Length: 108
Image 1 (cartoon, rainbow, N blue to C red):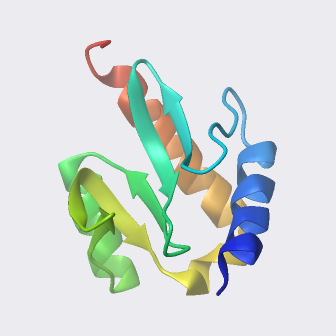
Image 2: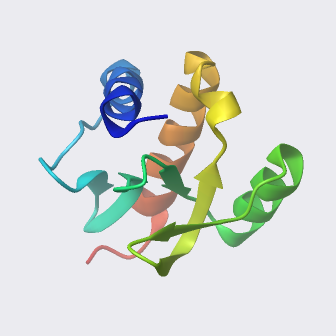
C-alpha cells in the first residue's frame, strides 16, 4: 500500500478513537502520558505499542512480528498486518488498548 492511502486509513482509525488524536506531519503518531503508542512509518506500516503479554498474544494471533521504524526495532511495538486495517472496529479497539497501556505507565 502506498503511504498516502495508509495515512488515510490511519487517520480514519484515530478519528474514531476516544481520548486522543493523530500528531505529526511527516512522522505520524499518537501519544499520551509522555509516550508514543501508535506509529505510521515511512514504509506505510502501522505499529502499536502493547504490554509484553498483549504483544505476544497479538503477534501469535495475527501471525506478525515486531515493528521497525527507520531500521530500528521499536520497544513494545508490534507490526499491524495490512489485512486488519479494513476492520475499523478492530483497529479502534487495538489503538484504544494501546492508549490505555501507555496511560498505565509511569508518566514521562
